[in-house]
Image (cartoon, rainbow, N blue to C red; front, top):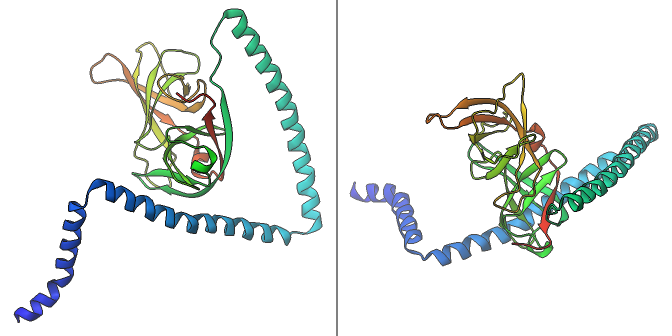
Length: 276
């Protein structure tokens, strides 16, 4: 009978020994083991990403010529609109430079854009993360901004040789200095706990009492450019509700983030040319 009890408790004893050994191991060894495991795992995820792209390529090869012609016409229209928008963007940039020179205002920090493909995503309630197919070999460092056409994606949290982990702005781990689009006063933005299959949301704090927002009158929220690598004016989301904080000195509110955040396949990493 004691022998049978010993046999039944062997898995628990083994688990206890492993946990005790893990607690005793120095932190440096743990970090090295974690990084080594990630570097071994990363090629598998990257290969799966390339395989998905190859599968999409061959699925497109099965399309008929009529479908391809229609897609080509639609692409030509989109290209023409983008060319027009690029011309307007150049004109606006020249006007901004002229006004900055006239008013003796400091220019925005210069950044280099590094496009990156999304390898995988983890959108659980606690972890809101993306893994992208660019790493230290491409000059990416921890803390740099990641953006897309709709605004801010998040911030690089971990950098490996060929991949990087990005904390989304919907993650509780991301806190940024923000401001309303029509107001320069800085406020605090932070991601929150977002249940799966729901629209990503965040929160704002330390909002001045004279500012108002509601579902009928939402206010765009952008980065303020203070206290970090994020340039000013990048869109974060829309504030749909503001309420007085418990201390009555400020307001707090809820921020709706673009639902495209959970469907991105390509992002842009902003790398400062003159890092702080």
